[in-house]
Amino acid sequence: MTEEQPPPQEISFTSGGEVCRGWHFLPQSDAMTKYKRAPCVVLGHGFGGTRDAGLVPYARRFAAEGFHVVIFDYRHFGVSDGEPRQLISIEKQLQDWAAAAAFARDMQGVDPSRVAIWGSSFSGGHVIETAFLDRRVAAVIAQCPALDGVSLLKAYLRYAGIISGIRLLCAGIRDRVRGLLRWKPITLPVIGQPGSLAFLSSPDSEPGYWAIAPAGWRNEILARIALEFPFYRPIRHIYELTCPQLQQHCLRDVIAPPPRLDLSRQPRGRKTIVVKTYDCGHFDLYQGEWFEKSLADQIAFLKTVFS
Image 1 (cartoon, rainbow, N blue to C red):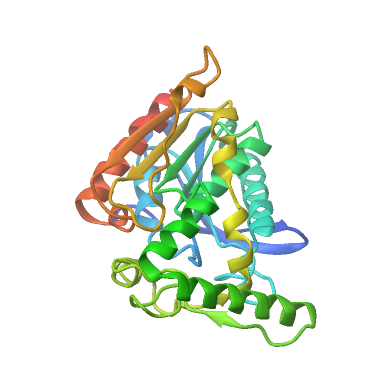
Image 2: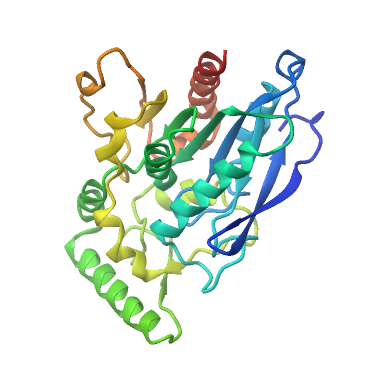
């Protein structure tokens, strides 16, 4: 954390008739703020996370480079509105991303033509979908992205086993039925030890997530998302984006294994995809050596896009 930087400003915007809340980090670099309007990077968390779970170090470094930065909580999480709490809805989270990008474009001092979106893990897929639907997005950073629900399911079954997969599915069905009946929902842990029933139970899930989780973070989500994520496939739209995108993949990722991208499928004359790989696991990019390496690549990418 950069000591000289002021605390972020509280912000809010409306999505789906409810309020999302977040932080706005002001640009700090004279090199960028000498212009009337500066670029902006919008950050959103992955599976079950909140704005204060590991994203602030990225925000402060981007702000130090002269970018406006917005971090937000999805509806149903953190300081944002939405009932029931701890509900992951892919449709709603994509609406929240669209609303956050629109909000950033309208912020004072932001160049609306230079708004990038940054996602990690589950939100690494969201930013692909968002840029596919919103061609005003200037650039995309997808860090250890969850791009293919089928691959995610296969990876889960490899480290958790078929019995856990069946139990997860059954819990999802029961929770969906209870939701339709407006009964008390069924929740499951986001992370758990190997062998436990949780959405993430690989050997690195608990130590990796707890290392970035803030005090008071709720290790639970509604089980019904188990019925959605296997069918979520942002990878279908990677080659259709018109804006530059940085794909950052962890070679030892057992949660969201790196996809095999065919860069020859990019539209002729628009080589927009930059791929960087790191010899580490899913949670390693949030701290230490791998954080510095991946962040350096992100900053270099953004400076190229926004130059």
